[in-house]
Image 1 (cartoon, each protein chain N blue to C red):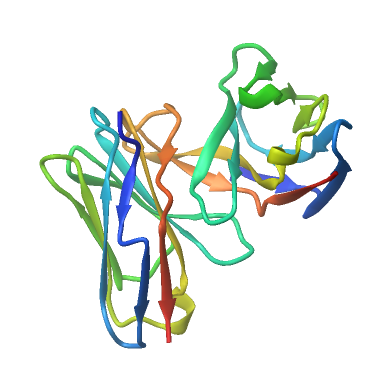
Image 2: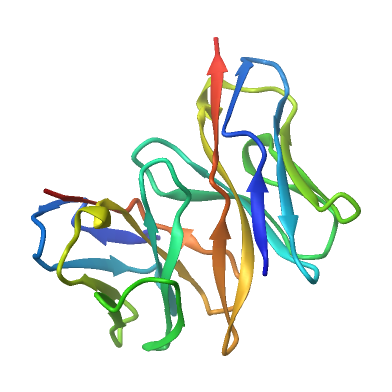
Length: 113
Length: 116
């Protein structure tokens, strides 16, 4: 079975632009979470979606938004990009929103110029 | 609030010698704890998890961790390091975020170097 897939793998944007990152969970997984990993740091929780509804939100500004589709894939959107948004964005899926282990994709490397 | 502290930002061992990566947690109740590994330019892979069953948890690739409530620790060990173990390791606690959902809170990571 395919693991969590994310696209694109790399992306370069300039300040003020917006970006959309995509994630396809493992087949059968209904929960998708997004994390931001700044260079040299551990990942930080951004959002969790389960059954197409937002179930958790980390301490990120409203410029960050996400949604989950009927096939459980997900998009992360970031508006008005800042230099500080440069990071590796990781998507993780799990069967449900409980304590099952989360399985991570390889991430999207976003660079802001 | 729940959190984890990884006591070493960088650990260096010789191939074939034991590995010890230290993690302390703070929690007002029995936590769910995980260790994840991240190889360069890759996502995170689950090594092992503790969810209040056995205190000694065995994971993949020969790693194991022991949950010690009295010391609030969850250290990761391996008897003999291999070159392929060189990576970044994260100690993680699962935090209840409401509405039946849990989010992962990561430590800052420990970079493991293995010397041939």
